[in-house]
Image 1: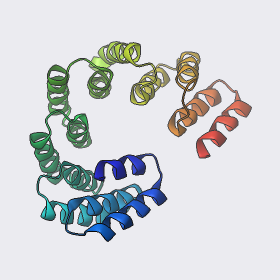
Image 2: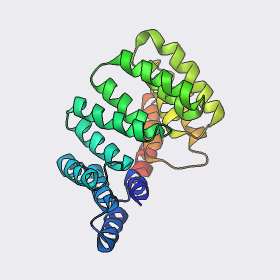
Image 3: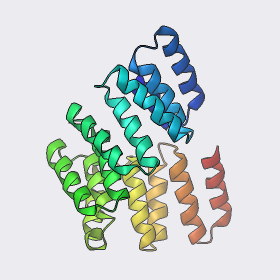
Image 4: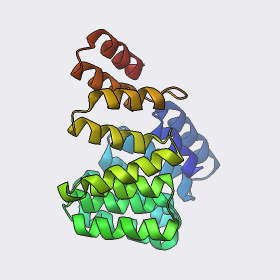
Length: 230
């Protein structure tokens, strides 16, 4: 239920998250899950101090709750307390070494503190440990994009990821970011249209709007922004 609440929150379905939290608290407040779900609601409402408190409460009830550690780590990171966040993500990795989101949280902390080398080492370790799939390729590419020297490597990794999963949103977003830097707007538009053919995602619609503005297609850009807002 804590993972379910996190997924609902990530999709922006905050009313459903709030209702789920209430239902779980009615069952028991002596388990970590209701506190995590409520913490996810607070986190995605940008109330990070509240999310931090709720995550800490969940950890008190169950120190092995990976979702609680991820919640508290994310809240600490967004509050600028990166070193404390790193401790929580490392503990989450120890408990769940096959969960990619644990590594993603730690790497985001390294990038936030400009520790590119540490982020690169960790991303390479994930790539070797979990194998070459769309998620690990994209994670490694994300780190490569932070260093001008490894831009071409990032491009190669993203192409491999998109060959495996053309609809993988994180890979599409990072490839679009790279194409924007290179001012290859027509290529970016084609990439985004292809990704949106079988799914609708507000971030992709917004980025497509930005690309359309760059080529002076203002009316269609407005249409894309409207879809994103909906």
